[in-house]
Amino acid sequence: MRQMQDAGIAIVADSASDIPQELVERHRIAVLPLKVVYGDRAYVDGVEISPQEVYSRFPKEIPTTSAPNVQEALDLLRRLQRQGVRRVIGVCVSSHISASYSALSTALAECRDLEGYVLDSKGISLSSGLCALWAAEKLESGVPYEEVVAGLAGKAAHASPYFYMDSMEYLVKGGRISAAAGMVGSLLGIKPIITCSSEGTYVVAAKPRGTRKSLEKLLELVVERAGSGPAWLALESGAGDPEQLAWMRRELHSRLPKATLLIEKQITATMAVHTGPGLIGVSVLNEL
Image (tube, rainbow, N blue to C red; front, side, top):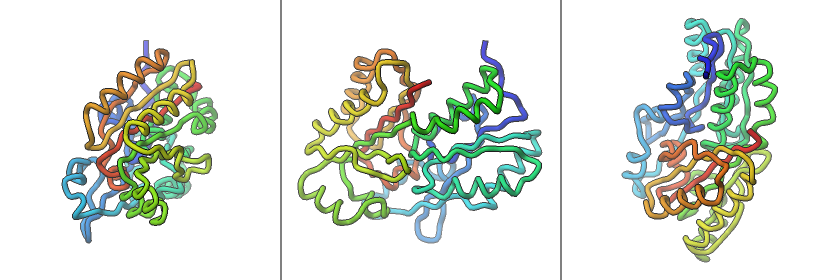
């Protein structure tokens, strides 16, 4: 029987880690939100704005995103302390992509009576979120805090995101790739597969031409990464073709029978800003 997580330990994940609300509540994960910014108005990710709202304002309005600041991270940690938390495990998306890791690490260092560890997952979206869920599962299984932290330190190496994007336009406008790369991709009909390097930067894993070839390549990369053993998968989408999503779901079940499709959801608003509406993504966590 699964135990309840020790009330004195809290897991904190930034909203860009994209953990579904149901799992946030089930595992009592504290979420440090990013923001979506339109002009002088900032909207709290997942609270004040949804991905559908972001998509509905494309392409006329393309917002920016902002990471939580140190004070916001401090406020969250102090609230947890008032609730009896003594130790914290933090998980954030790549520090090369967001400053949430820096904000949470700095805030934790200022809370001298709070023990903690923050993981720079070197990933994006649910490749980071799956690491946080792995930590929650271990704690609930009775694994001591110190062992969970020790295992989590290497867990990022086993977590990988792969995203099919219908266009490079939004990565270019968000400053994630160069305008030259985006222009070449558009002219050649390239539908890139984006992942993260071991350092946590965006890289193009493959450059197929055409939607079908790109989705097949995405599946190939996921199957290769997941391997033949147990793995967790997370399937995410933008506002694209539901038939493409259904095809990917079927193929994942067929090609990876030992893997668990743990999550299926629409991508969070802050990630929608940079990836655009035509997105299908699969994150993998193996070596469970």
